Amino acid sequence: MSSLNFFKNIKPITNFTDACDIANYVDAPESCYILLTDIKGSTKAIEAGRYKDVNMVGAACIAACVNTCRADLPFVFGGDGATILIPHEYYDEIALQMAAVRKLSEEYYGLGLRIGMMPMSDIYQRGYSFKLCKYQYSTGAAIYMYGGEGPNAADNIIKNGEYLLDDNEVSTHPNLTGLSCRWQPIKSAGGVVMTLLVQARNQDRNQDRQNEIYRKINDFITNDCKQVSNPIANDAGLKYTWPGFEGFRMAKIVWKQTDPLRAMIAQAFETFVFRIFNRFDITMKGFNACQYKKDMQENSDYRKFDGLLRMVLDCRNEEAQAIEEYLKGLHADGQIYYGIHRSKATLLTCFVESVQPDKHVHFVDGDDGGYALAAKQLKSQISASL
Image (cartoon, rainbow, N blue to C red; front, side, top):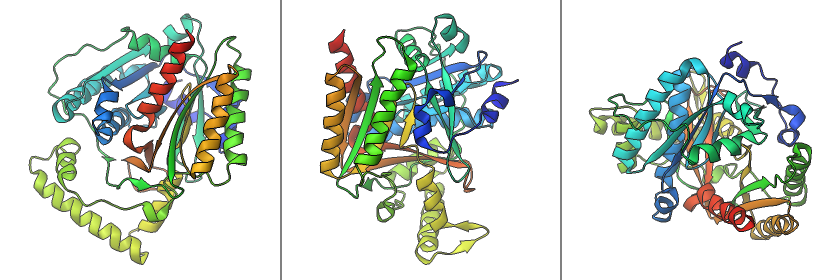
């Protein structure tokens, strides 16, 4: 069976709590590759206020891969990069696309991009497991979760210099069709957007014990913190932005327009129409802006696993404090490492293959650095324990 068929045929779960149970995961195909990308010096870029640029490059890696394979792929957006499973038969095409994304990142954003492609068979030969779980939204759209030691092991191996793609010159422009960043930062309804990363400690490689820790954390947030919510569920905060300089640049990056001003005018018209359709609840040719926003809120990746538990949560200050104290206690007890970043808003980067409910997914990160700055704290805790 090809990897694409394997991914397609994974039986999905529909309750996020079930993602904490390793019994709902299957072994990733040995024939596929693990593509891992991350932005060099992303922390400095974020500290300089360039978090939107960082998110866009991370999402561009996903868009280029999905557009190349013309099929759903297991991917996880990490804010300053992504982890994607690639069928072996697409290796050469994806390598070319990633080289093109790297060139774009350097030329348009001034950001270096590290890219590695590691055979899954090598992960298994080194004694690590790499598990997959498909989480399906009510719209029919789906994202994938990763489990086992393999995701974190692959990250460390590639960042240590193995399996890196050569920095070759390319003339190809990456296929970024569907990639967009048209929404204003979404202000928190509760006052705090908390971005958190949690890694269960792997002292005895007991997967059941680790997943029980993740389940406890998810249950605490879900059951004990009643006002915690999806950070883009704040309908009043979802506002289309008018295309300015960013629209001009996006026209050149995504649509390869030789006349980006013309593309900007088209974007401005689209924004105007969307706002009118949304305000008056108009449906035309099957498209309804109000329903699209509801689907978009559902299809957001604000909770996920990729060897780490990743969450972006909208909450009140009291709940943010309770979550932090709870994680602090688990860390003191030797059960987890964690990283937290607080901000006032959420950033949204979108990949829209079409406006059909199951054909768009929306990447969520905390404003002002989100995942990248939470990862800085997590890495500091890991280093302190060595």
